Length: 389
Ligand code: TYM
Image (cartoon, rainbow, N blue to C red):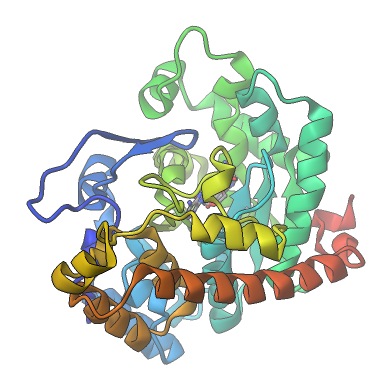
């Protein structure tokens, strides 16, 4: 059941030597050892038993689970047993609108849509415009407002069910969040916030209070439904500190602890690191033109040898190659990807071929996605919380 190669992704080197790395909601650096993160963050691995339970409930196991792209969780098993007993959960995920959307952001959202469809559940999607304004010294509220609008188009373009999805923009919908956020904030000390988020005396007080706002949609479903409602959060693991803090106070406030399912990061197309808006030349954005995609993919780092002759002789390092991972998570079927891996390792595949596959697949994906972004413009209101825009 488990994919033997996926633990190599982004950091597990062949001799198991790991360099320093850092994962916080605002900074991801270095070569990430995902097993170490599970240990450090105190989360659980997604076991074969959990995957079998998913299969029992929805009849299949999504490749992102099977290939361990989603690799860690808190209480996912509990969410599944609740569901089995007829207790529907809400999904909750989000975006901090600091720039345009890249393909890395899309992965957890595509998986969230899949969960929404398969389990037939409601979704709250939070846009933390306040967080992104407070975090950066330079960004103006107007800039953030621009990205909020652009990012909403991407969220809608993913294809969430408009009858079951509500987007919350913090500065617009604050009156729905503030009563719960205040309850939370009163129970979280500065010393806890410092320990969880690494805040210091020079952190602005907006940032220090902000985590209670990101925690609030974990409890909103219970208010909306008028009964204790379980919540499952699909996101990359960088967001986990928020949930650690929220889980600590949930039961004291009379709510269930929110459950999480954590993904790895889609790597950027450079030598190392996650796909990130701060390195635009190594990220593919949903708004990139085909020529730009061609250029970025052709300059991508690969796991190939220095020359064709060496590649034929020694084979390539597919598991250290962002192009390989990108194709595996987004475009190849599991079988195609396994074949690609074998052909690469045995020297029967050259980097140019993989790059050409990636450029072709990414261009057709993005061209199509852009059409959905355009149509999203007409239906924004239907997605907004209480139709307030
Ligand atoms: P943000 O905008 O940094 O990221 C949005 C979502 O994308 C994930 N992510 C990635 N996933 C895979 N590969 C990457 N290279 C990559 N880069 C980012 C993030 O984990 C996240 O799921 N504070 C949050 C906004 C937020 C939120 C939430 C996110 C509010 N409530 C609930 C998740 C769940 C933020 O700034 O995300």
